Image 1 (cartoon, rainbow, N blue to C red):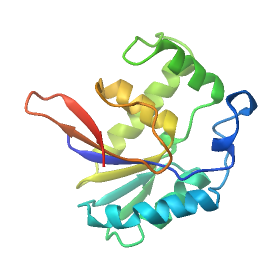
Image 2 (image 1 turned 180 degrees about the horizontal axis):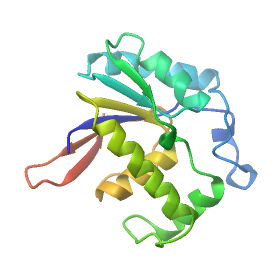
Image 3 (image 1 turned 135 degrees about the vertical axis):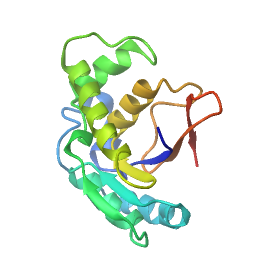
Image 4 (image 1 turned 90 degrees about the vertical axis):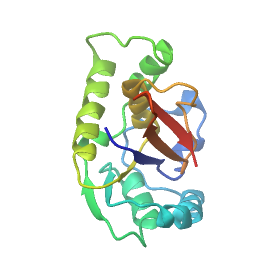
Length: 176
């Protein structure tokens, strides 16, 4: 258990579609100009953090965001396949249950949660403070796994979230 930071990738054209138009959140697409600007805006904040390892989803939008926001970091980079985004079907299932509601023991949503858990185990086993660059569904799953309260589980593109442990050994999340 150690603190870490999370950044959701920059905006894509897919992010601005209406919910009924979204077919596959796990599609491998690039960030758009707005997403590039969002990443450039938060880069100075990221540069001031004491990050030793950058762990990112293999998908283009996360990799492109990582390359912009971590440009000045003296940190190793690690691609973690388990941080790939979920499908729209899984996203609907996760959010239908709501925050802190039990996820069914079987099915695609449970498999996604377990996949993110594997990614978290790998990221947090690295030396130093990690920065995770991934997706909205991954952030939701991390919040679920850590039992986060008093924090919005659905975050905007390029939101920076600091995950830390309080004096009672409970996880907290706060946007920077």
